[in-house]
Length: 121
Ligand SMILES: [Fe+2]
Ligand SMILES: [Fe+2]
Image (cartoon, rainbow, N blue to C red; front, side, top):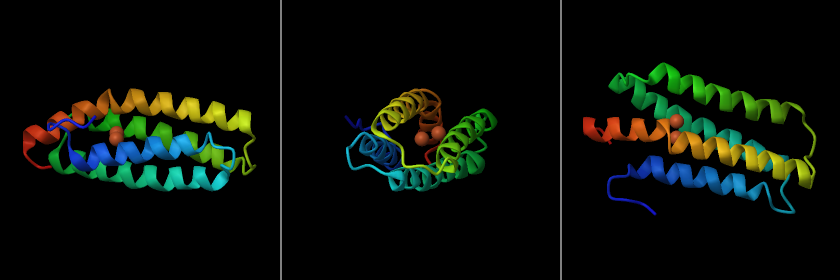
């Protein structure tokens, strides 16, 4: 549920990321879903990183490190280059959902608060 204190772009993009991860669980999901996740993740991370850099966000280095870990996870999954089977997709989707939930409700919230307080959203 969106609150009035949420930053609209950040909240909307997180929802898209969760939706793409959910698609991975579908019976007809293929490696294209992972590519889409990689593409959209990069778009989202780049925008957060732009705000962090422009606003000189104090937690910037730690936050970018966390993004980079996620980037590596996805690129390693893609490097394997195989169509993931149902069990593997379920495991990947669970892992990615847990990671993203921790991130979105953890350090992304700190960034959101900082952006809101800066009046730059
Ligand atoms: Fe985020
Ligand atoms: Fe983030």
